[in-house]
Every structure is written in structure tokens, then in C-alpha cells.
Length: 256
Length: 305
Figure 1 (cartoon, rainbow over the protein chains, first blue to last red):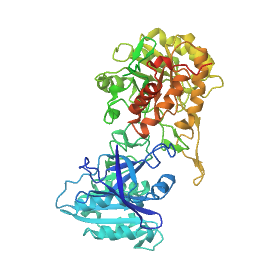
Figure 2 (tube, each protein chain N blue to C red):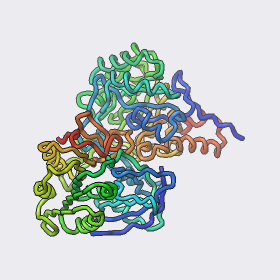
Figure 3 (cartoon, each protein chain N blue to C red):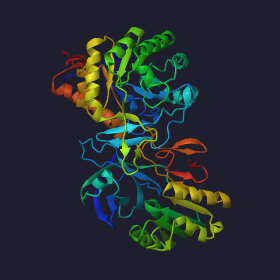
Figure 4 (cartoon, rainbow over the protein chains, first blue to last red):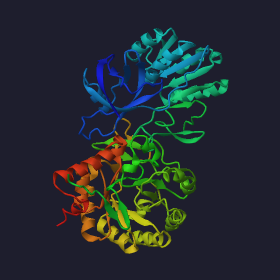
């Protein structure tokens, strides 16, 4: 368990917030795909009771900063959005297995739906050093895409976007973009986002025999493998998203 | 320097302190051991085991409520064979008493499980779960009928030589009747309470939040109900009680001990912060020190009139 100082916590769009926290000295190995399980109440309060799992959006070992990007959707993230610079935040982590990152000279596709793009950014930064990356981003509207478009473009990756209301990029969903791309071309695919999107992408991947990884979301209890709240179905049987995941080979996940 | 004795007795078994993990919230020990030295605990109660491996209920399995959690995990577990082959050898490496929680659909199931676990001296006892709200056609049904509680206890008692703990459901009209049935059936220890049956509705979707519709409520929200039930049972039965329900701190634990529990189990708190398990032990010790109490037994049942 750790406690870190918050360096900043800024609102970047109507409901998106970016929190920068000091990386604890004893934590060196933060991989893309890891998450932190944050306590969002004051220390003796029991409400809200559970921690909130938030993926690592970026990590900068030089400045000693961990970045968390979150969407204000409920009570927990509402409280999180009120934290100020120099407040302390208590968390467990980094947790989870993380993405595979040891690729070189490959053509890689990243696909993010909504907030699913958040953990893909650190991955994109790490992979873009020695690989050719294409990033497909999908969201409801422009407001949810502007920030992501800018940061992903800065990595040197080729970036395309789709919005349901047509206010940014292609009008439609991110799967349409995927169909426009020559998906055969890619050596590996990473994706994170809503289940219907992942399900469609898995179908395409099976048709073209493509390999890759999905980072899954599920409601968590403990976040450390104790309670079996967050299990998902895979070809290996039930797996804990918090412990064996959140990243799974895309061909192993069974969607219902 | 005041010498503080935190030890407590559950029938023939002595625990070095009264803090036990509640079933289903500590995995099979090894996950928890990554965060705390589990050998510092009084005992470990592992995840509920059934005759066959179960994959549990559909998602979502958990929902947050005011100071509480509703869960409907549905007893996902590797089955008795999987447990004995894969989990027990790991558990046997830890030097602390281990209780194995067992669940069934019938008396035969419970007897079968107890027989299977009987040959293993590395297990100190079995916790007979007649109170799980999350399984169909069994589980809680056993714990809401005192004649069934009596029968299950008696049959398990015949085949199991170690400590038999009966875990009771709070979803009953008269908890004392259930506890007395367990005592008459030959239980060594009673543990209570299991979760309270509850429900949450997602008003945006206009649907139940849990995939299984209903779930078991745990956490600080249920503590007053649990303390009341421990108190009622302690007033009427002679066998020791493991009290549980929303314990988050040493003072919460002491309430249960004063209500008549000989030991306490901690579940939801471990999910929020595993370190709390050990902190609770420290806080009980601090309370005793501050109040010049040298033996835990001096606290147990103190609030009983």
C-alpha cells in the first residue's frame, strides 16, 4: 500500500480529468497496462467503501510521475475529481499483468474506445520507439476525442478517429475505421474499450488470423485477487481481471 | 511492561489472537500473503468449497452500497478435488490454523465434503456454510430451517474429527433457534453472521445491478445487526462464537468480543485494505493496554447482561 502526493489534478474536458501523482521511490517497474486501486474516501470513512481501479495512463520515471486519466461517472470519480495539488492519495499497486511490450520493427494497431484509450497511451509511447504504430480512436463526440488525438499524434503514430455524432473524424464507430484499414497488414493488435467493440474486433481478428491483446474492464472488489468479483470467461476457464489480467491474449477471451 | 495475552480458545483449538479471515475474502491464503504475513493472523478461513468445481454467477457480481458491498460471486471454486490437489499443499506451508468452508445442495454433499477433508491434519476445522445466499436450491435454505441445521450438523459431526463450525445465516426470524439446533447437533463452534440478502437497482437501466439479481450485503452497514445476533446467541448457547459482520477496526472487533464472541472474522475490510487485518490485532492489543486488561478472556462477553 502506498500514499503519494498529487502533483496536479486537472479537468481536461467536461468529464475527463488528468491526475499526476508522485511515483513512490520503491516502485520502479510500472508497465503499460498496469492499474492502481485508489482509495477515494478519507482515512476513517467507510463510504464509499471500495477502492477505484484506474489504469496507468502514462509513467515518466525521470520526473517521477504517474498519470491517471479518469472519467467522472459516479460517486468515486466525483470525489477523485475534487482532490487538489499536494493532497495525498492512498493506493494499492501497480496491479495487474500489463501488456506485452517487447516488439521491434513491427506494424502495430492500437484501438481505443472511449476511456479505453487511456491505458493505450503509455503503451503507445513505449512501442513507438521501435515499431510502426497506427492508432484508431472512437468516442461519442469531439469532446471525448480532442485530448487523445493530440497526445497520440505527438508520439509519431498515425492516428484516425471516429465519433458517433460525426463531430470529429469519421461519423460512426471505431470498427468502421478498422474495416477501412487494411487489417491484414498488422503484426499485432492492442485494444481496450467497450465489450461490443472488443467483440467485433475479435471477430475480425479471427477472420484474418491476427494476434493481439485486449485489456478488459470489470467491476472489481478487492483488485488483488481475493474476492473473485471481476472474473471473465476465457478459454482457460474463469480468470481474474485484476490478477491474471487485465490484459489477455485476444484469442483467449470468451464474450457472452 | 504489561504482558498482553491475546490468545483465545475455539473448543479444543487455541488461537494466538482472535482475528480470522472471513471465507471468500482471502482467496486461498497465497494472494493475501503478498500483502501481509498471514501467519500473524489467529486463523485463516478459505473460500467455500463444493463437491464439484463451480464457475460462479454471471457478471456483475459486486455492487457498492452505503458503507457496504453486495456480492453475488456464487461460490466459484475449484471443487473438493481441485482444492485438495492444488490449494491444500500451498496452505499446508503456512504455520497457522486453517478452516475450510464447505457448501452443498444436500446433506449428502456436506457429509461427502467433510469425509474428504477428514484425513488432513493440516486443516484445523471445517466451517459448514448453511447460509450462502448466492446458490440456488441449497445454501441458505439449510440455514433457515432449524431441523435441517440440526441434521446437517449431526451428520457432519459423525464423519469429521476436527473442529466443526456452523456458519449461520442472518436471514432468519430467530437466530437463536438456529444456533441452538447447531449446538444440539454437536457443533464445536458457531460463526455468524453470513451476508444479509439484499438488492440494488440501476435506475438508469431500470434493472437490477447484480447479474444474479440478489446478493449478500456485507461491510460496516451490517455491523449493528451482526453484533445484535452475536449477543442474542451468546446469551443462549454455551459453544464459542466467531463473530463477524462489517469489522473494520479494533474497536469494532471488541464490540463483537464484548457481545460474546470468542474470536472475530474480518472479510470486507480485507478487500478494501488487507493490512487492516493486522491493524485490527494491534488495535485490540492497544485497547487492552490502555484499559489495563491482560487477558482477552476478560473482554469476552463483558456486555452480556
